[in-house]
Amino acid sequence: MSIDTDLTGPDEAVGRGPIGATSRVVRGGRWRWLATWGPPAAVFVASIGVWYGVSYLLLDPRRRFLVPPPHDVIRVSFLDPYNLRELLDALWLSTRVAFIGLAISIVLGLALAVAMNRAKWIERSVYPYAVLTQTIPILAMVPLFGFWFGFGNFSRVLVVVLFCIFPIIANTLFGLQSVNQEHHDLFTLHGANRLTRLWKLEFPTALPSIFTGLRIAAGLAVIGAIVADFFFKQGDPGIGILIDRYESRLQSEQMVGAIILSSLLGIVVFWFFGFLAHRVVGAWHESAGGLDT
Amino acid sequence: MQERGRRSRGGPSLAEPSPVDDSPIASEAAPLLTFAGVGKRFPDGTTALEGVDLRVEAGEFVSVIGPSGCGKSTLLRIVSDLTKASDGTVDIQTNKIGYVFQDPTLLPWRSVQANVELFAELRRLAKTERRRRADAAIKLVGLSDFAGHRPRALSGGMRMRVSLARSLTLQPELFLFDEPFGALDEIARERLNDELLQLYLTQRFTALFVTHSVTEAVYLSTRVLVMSGRPGRVLADFAVPFEYPRSPRLRFDERFARLAGQVSAGLREGG
Image 1 (spheres, rainbow over the protein chains, first blue to last red):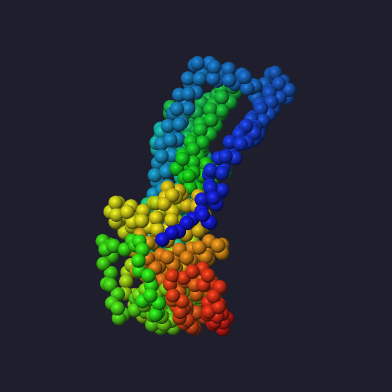
Image 2: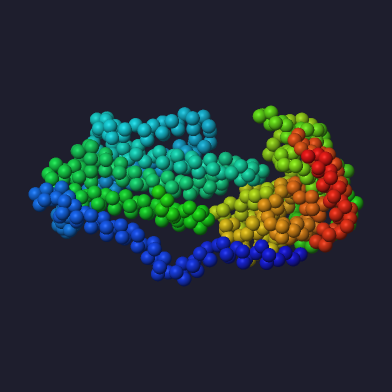
């Protein structure tokens, strides 16, 4: 038999597919690059300008320490080897805490979401408490954790988990539940068991939203690590303790330096998960890789 | 039904002894599918089907046509055992059932090849066997050049072909179609009608085909059933006398127009 595909075939397919998109990028290459990077670069330059303006025009020299100009921040925080060392050590400590907390949150969050998806009663019993992790004033809880579990890394990791587990649970659950009924029917028709259904249908369907959750959680993990540190004020110094210390000594250049470094960490982590999402689901899911938050 | 004897039985076929389903082979006497007084009420109180009697012999191509919400899809779901009937008896002489939905329901993260292999994979067929079957099925629907593409790179008609190929891998004896071409444009739809008829003639399945289109129903089938509005009952049963293979010119034949007119009239009475 002969079935040719010319009518609804390759032409139509190519026009909508990635090939067409690529050729457009090539044609408008330089301008597209400018259109992509120009606006954020302009905002960056403008912000630096405002920063200098505030330091030199708004503040008189005696009060300039409140907003030290950018070049002083770089000189004192990043070009002084001793100060830089102190900052990087603290950053490494906070990064470790953030990553351990994030890893625990991912494992625990995915497991909880899968369990909730499996049985409505589990969802009803667990979800309200998952929401609670978002609504209780975690800042107020932080000192309590210190009392209960000591001021070591265990308590810090715990704070990180409290900070970032909810977006993982919520997004994973949403993803698992967004499998459409006909796909479920197909798997039912062919006798798929729960595990097969989870692994071959629900989990892949959920991946784009899981990654959305991971990106949000990753940013929160960094914040959680620093907040825990900042409030504990004890134990090995992470970035939070340094910020607190610089604050009390009025070392504003280093304080701003520490804030910049921790923001960079958050951005790198956020970007990493965006990149990962793009690699894993970008080939088949439209939303993947877009910085949509 | 007199068409059965005249059907061409040549051509390439996927049919081979299947290691999965040893279904009771339908005897010549018993119909492949029998509904007797089948009714379906949903928990919310709506009655989708009421007193449906239906016999489908092996080798028939039966179309079911009726107004929206008349329970046509429910009928197919009962045949495939996705839904249980509330009343009546259902007798099906095969468990090799293929089911094609209006949406191609492909998994977007899988390539065409992997999508077509899915059912054989779920039925735990050996890797070489499911590859062999998928290759043959993809070839049958003319998509060999697209085996590595993901569904999003394909047109609607091509996606539907992938969906057909996926079901063909399990060599169904009874093929259920739930408005498979309803979302396609006219040209793609007519082309797929012809391709489906080719498959019907070469792959020797029995078809139960739900559609909204009178032309499509008459063009494809050996028999057209007209259903009433909710609750759905079978109102009329038209035998289609044209022999296979059918050519697209048949759609402009006077006898075709007359029969389509009768089906339409039956549909209006029921609606």
